[in-house]
Length: 112
Length: 114
Image (cartoon, rainbow over all chains, first blue to last red; front, side, top):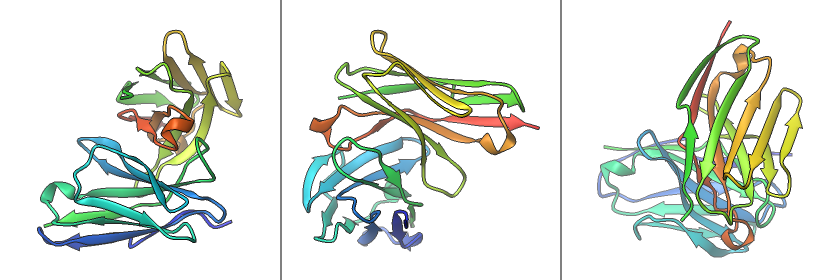
């Protein structure tokens, strides 16, 4: 069974630009969660999508958004990039609520 | 909201020794506690988890204990090997109401010296 796939693995963007990251969950999983990982703040929850609906949202500005498609694939978008958005963005896939979450390898975003 | 504290931040052990990492959580409604191992350049890997209706769970050299009264849980690794070297994260979830939202501890860098 294939794991969680995140694309791209690496991205370099300029301040003010926007970026879209993609996540394909494990086959059959309906929940996709996104996390930001930085050396200073650690792993922080961004949002979760389940059956195309955002179920929970972390404490991040509105520049961070996401969506989920009918095949459970998810995208997250960051608009008006800031230097502080440089981080590893991780996607986690779960079968349903409150079940084991399996992470992808992440997308390393660098904002210059 | 939930707050998870993890100690120590770094841990160095000799190969074959045991390693213990401890976490405390603040929200008594939390009922699911996974542990993740993250190697350099990779995403976190789920290694073991425990739910609040269980006090201890073992999987080969790894065990997790949970004390709901004190609101803390621990990861125990016995007979450590160099390949156990990684960063370990504990996490807590409030359960169905919170969907799959995990609150993570700050991480423990484990170094196993051959």
